[in-house]
Length: 484
Image (cartoon, rainbow, N blue to C red; front, side):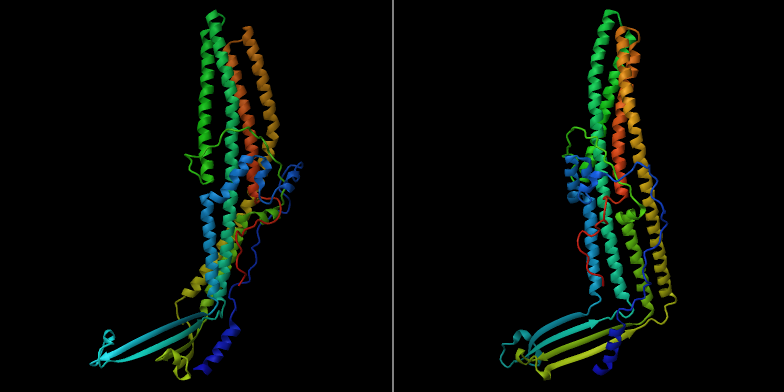
């Protein structure tokens, strides 16, 4: 048995590692040859060089936002899910790599028995006339399925690629949570700024109502003027109440993002920081390096490619090698004597002769899955370009609108002042004052909204380019094992 097994063992050693998977190449994708469409004034932002890698939110100069972003990484439950999924994928890699190596086992036993009146009665060993015997056994076993056609190694490669895709999902979820937090936070601070402006308007409108009532008592204003002043004030107070509703909605959303109970979470109103940092122009190749979703889609293609090799290997025989070394004796002192030791070597091979096309169908299915992964990768790349193009256009448009909104607010303030003077002079009624006040508030809200839109568009663009200015995104929160 020993000599017959040697040729099979030698053949297994020579053939182990042969792979049936196609040679893997990163799929080609439709990429534009020129830079993104963007106005000529765009250039790399000077503050970007001083920002820690990936901590893009620090460009906005808000300490509260910095604190919240740090909490997202620790307590966000969505990220906790993806971290656990990544840990599970790493465990799968270790399991599949272990399948490439032999399995070694051992067993030991001690048996003591006796006979009384011809019956085996271990419980009566102390009875007069009983005979006893002790048996000690120790066995060691080893088994190995050589990876002749690359099925196991391709499984391990596929698991590694899947783990890397899981790491990319974690990075993408992290970037998404950070971006959502920043956008929601800027919306909340914009609401606070609108509320502060509206509070000032309410004070002025309340005072104007009192003046109008006095004028009505004196006979210099009409009842319509009083009604118009009351309507304007009531509308402002209603808008103020709606801003409170919007603030609560955004505040509770931030609470969930940082993993805290919305009922106990609170963000006090703070001084508004209308900071809108510049972002650098980005070339298409850099987007491919920085976006974790693109990297993850490419890793899924690699995993699908490895799966083709796994299915193709099923057409070839499976060879298993086994070895056993055992010893059986009546005492521990004689357990390892030559006369009591036994050994064996074995080899077996199995091949499916007829499966009515099942293996061919699995290979075809694996190839179809590969084609799906390639299509997903290419679609992800195209989507990345689309997002960057759209976000660049949004940032440029909101920036161009800023001057117009600023001029609109100044003009509305001036017009309202003129209208109030005319009302005091008795040349216009209070309806004109109310209309001017509504225009002023709308202009203030539009200017604040433009800043919030610019901040949100900047965050969206940062997400679209992968969340940092230079270098590839670190997709591995913990080290992956070496390639098999």
